[in-house]
Image (tube, rainbow, N blue to C red):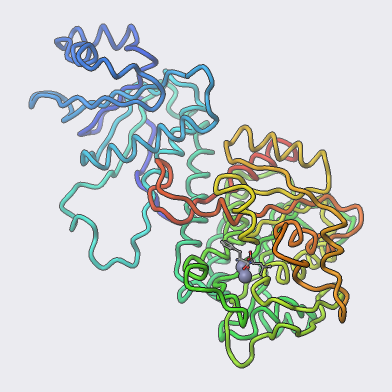
Length: 502
Ligand code: BES
Ligand code: ZN
Ligand code: ZN
């Protein structure tokens, strides 16, 4: 598990020595704080009066340096007033902004004095944002940014009359911060370090201690099983494919016996060179993120296990490296998928749908799940359609779409419905095999990709395909200070499971 600063603890009183104090301000100082301030000479009121831009709006801050004889070196006022049209992630953003401010001023031991003046839910979001806002990824730097001279943001003590209860109420936010950071770590890791074998190991070492059962199928096992599509994608790399199955809460392989599990499936291309249909320079640059779907599914399983989700869940990730060698799959090769259908591979860069086809068949054959959500950085076309902030959702079940839409509205992870239609499927008719892996032309690339996947979904099975190619990456934001992996999807799908299934 990634270690996120700061260490957060809850206490009934501010006994430990701290260098920075935080006071939440709901528009203006509370009566309690005002009286306290007056006793201490009125510095806070004076500073508020002389900084008219500080209105105590959610996320606004005002840093006040304190004199040498004071309890702290500085006091930071943090606005928590709800605007008229609150955004779902506003408290997360506020926490993220606060994290960067605390790091900038060199705060090390911080105390939050009046946690009881904010709702537990909003505090939980703020702590999630604060943790995510202090995310870093510098394990490969031999020289640290400030040579260790600057103090690290080490501890945050939260003072509350109900410290124990508050600790319990906010643990979801902390679990989430660790799960999102796990997704980011996996995506940010370079492809010479994270490849199918090491990815599978990492899943084991992270999830088994949380109580998740992990099963790894290596290339030999995959050959025996007949996973022709997954093997074809990975055969040119010395790092051969793996299929990893994670199960939680007694998800069973015995069909129909217990409660049917929910299933999540992830595309895990640890590097997508395009294969013989090689990508150009710009296109290949970011392709270590092509395992983003598998990373998100892994992070989701971590979250579900941490919060002890009540329903059985199974997750399958198909891991392969799409490389080039004399053993590479050729455009026009025909392979047999795990489902038995033959696939003509006409473009080796449309590899995500191939590995997903085998994983989707596997999870249905083995677990007969209640529903499936697959996640994949599947097409560049989804970025043309929806930009970088909306995930494209192809859903064959209206009820499931409504649930996803609601989860999106409460978490702020944006989603937009896209069409599944027979006409897209027809574009993929092959002259020589049952289906080919590309459409007729350049248009509707995300829709033809989704239609291909649909071909491997059983009749009547509820299924959503989320194309996360646009949203898996992020520029710098208050809650994503390292610009690359965003960690999108864990919040959305955890909410989806929690609100509608348990
Ligand atoms: N991994 C890419 C999709 C992608 C592109 C993800 C950019 C993130 C950013 C995928 O495997 C791919 O190459 N898709 C092709 C499909 C085409 C060959 C039919 C694409 O989108 O161009
Ligand atoms: Zn590709
Ligand atoms: Zn790809």
